[in-house]
Image (cartoon, rainbow, N blue to C red):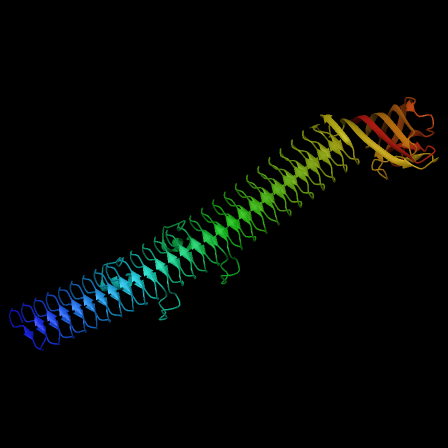
Length: 584
């Protein structure tokens, strides 16, 4: 005993350097000085300070006030009212800190506790670790008002290997007394965050919850991941005015591997109680978007829904891609409603046919399977593989029908085409209107053009018809047809037609002939007559060709009839009829 007052070095080999009322009572113990310090454990040391007690073997208190090192190898560097009660536990300093478990550490701060082995609290206030090997770097309660609110709003690590970087009222692991089922969870900082899933991570922000295995939330506010491997990078409630709207408008990942980049009120997966039914869905950002099925993607925008598996909405507003592999690039209130359907953008477009496509525009409807509308406004492609390039109020109803553009055009039969113009109607199968105004086709393969009308479409137009057939050898008056088998050149009711006919024929022996004739035919009230025609003009003929052709009228079918007489071998006839047509 070197000096001081009322000090006691009770056992041989003990040392008291000085101070007052210090006691070194076990072999090898040392008290450097200070007041009312006690070194009672074997080879324990108190450097100084006041009312410090070292009762653990090899334990050390550097100084401070009212500190305790209770277990073997425990250390308190200084501060006040700190306790190192676990074997080899350490409290660096601060106030009211408690390192209670084996090899636990509190660096400093106030009222921090490590209650399980290998845990570490760097500092801060009222941080608590229950799980083994947990870490809290710092932080403090979010409410300092009373002891109750301090206790309820501090940082806590419940499960093994959990980690909190700082902030306040953050929770890592699950408060279920099982310290192993939600381990390795991490919160970087922020406030009121909960990482309760095994290996879950929250970078920061506030009121975020990472509940599933290996889930990640980068930050933001009130984001929730309920499933495994889910991710929310950030964002928060779309309406943060009160607790109800915050809860109802936050970002949520319901199913495994779902991802939300940010924004507000976005949903990924399905709220059906299962976390594995609608996996790998993604919303990059925006507001109020829902990627509800597996592998669906929404790039951003507002109130978009991708509910078909592999469906995609790039952005825009109120778009719906609700079948498998459907795609909407953007725009507003567009719908891709059948398998493989696509809408590039625009407004109020609807592609509901299988593999149908709308490039853009407004109020376009592609209802036919494989139908396509390039753009424009108010267009319809209702037939299988029908096409409308654009324009206004065009309607392609026939299968494989085409309208390139223009306004108010319609194609009502299969494989018919309108190139453009306005108020043209292609009603005949395989018929064509190149453009112009108010032309109409009714027959197979008919071509028509008009630059206007008197009253109705088709009453002031030109036409082109091609008829054909094969006439057996030495057979007379075999009728030619528009389709080669049955479709006649029917004259519409109350229509007068001037015609020019060119006919060419060739037999199997390569002998040929060509003729030309002009005339007029009319259908008045269902009675069809030829008023007359010029004599048939033989244009050219091989010497060995013996065939011929005739024209006539069939009032029963209201048709212009062209027949061929065969040559010495089977003969191919083709007739081209060019017309000027006027309606009554």
